[in-house]
Length: 186
Image (cartoon, rainbow, N blue to C red; front, side, top):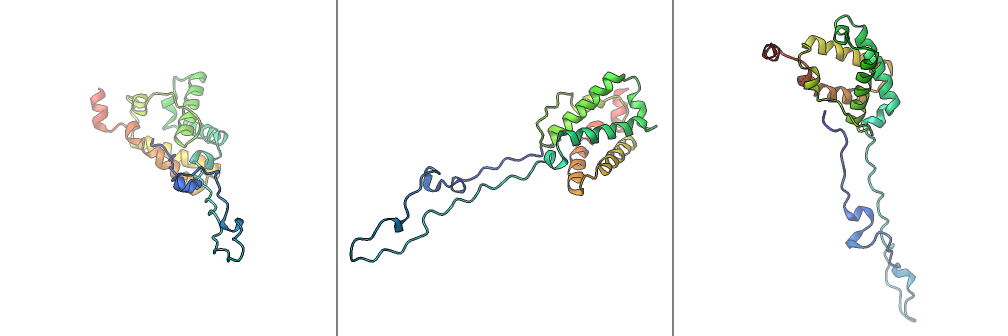
């Protein structure tokens, strides 16, 4: 999945470092220096312009989704739906309790990492993981319906839902095996 976080480089002037000055350096405004006797004080400027606060970066999708616990809750619901689906459940046959816990944790970590969270996904790439399982477009669509249902259950706002589904959809070609790919495996 493409990274969803971006880095901003702020110019020095936005940090109050106009002309390369230390941002903590403030010269005295002209009005602070008295005019010589008998002379009119020069027109003054308001002094150094207050530096604009650095632009706050937008919260990551991870944050907007509610963080780790929210991603874990959606994942638990999503996996439960897939396990109970007669079309998708057979992909999990043969996986014991511990293997299912590992699948769950890998999915949580992957979603956490790819939405800008602090997790590190340590699993295999999606093509290696799914090659030979015979996952078709119909399976993919069923899984997406379950993911949407899980996101809806937890009232994930449309913007965040669309962003997450967009990131997940980028994996489709690595997971779904078309007829040519299936023939090559036989």
